Image (cartoon, rainbow, N blue to C red; front, side, top):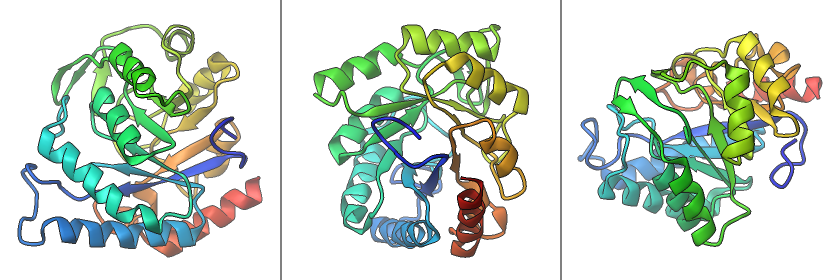
Length: 265
């Protein structure tokens, strides 16, 4: 349960991974924006029919990732979400990798209920030295009049190593106290890889009343262990055909997973 956002215990957020957007090296100009919209509509249907509690749109296809959004990719992501919103039956959130200020702006523009990003810390990453602007993101949320927009703080970024040598527990206490995290997300080292169980437990113990989600690598085999600790999870790779991140969503895998979650609830 995430107060002010979800009433369902052990919330499951399914990822709707957008294909490469205009300007990205892998963008398919031949299929264009219509192709991206068609693909994401199929994934939305599979996720909702499978029973997820919410959907989060992310620009996972935009490799190599940016630390600051480009005008064309941010506009394209907003346009796609605008075109598919009418198909949604569950709450939705957004995540522009890896720009927290752009993510908040996108969430407000599209009417999202929540937004996930790496808001705090300093990292050595594939993208270079990474220093998110938490203060800028939260000030933008306030300036745009969306205090209800829930911000999901990823406290141990994928594709990166924190230069902050404090423990996960210390970082979680800090972001809850000084950075106003609404939800804490704990990740594995890369997309699709499980979170370390000790990190998840440490985060949960440190977060107090703030909900904690497992952010990567949750699957049918480990979801029982994960949800024994976490308040919910974000699932992307496991829901894909053959468990491959870049494949389409497999509604059978979603249904089996959600059947297991309902039994755990």
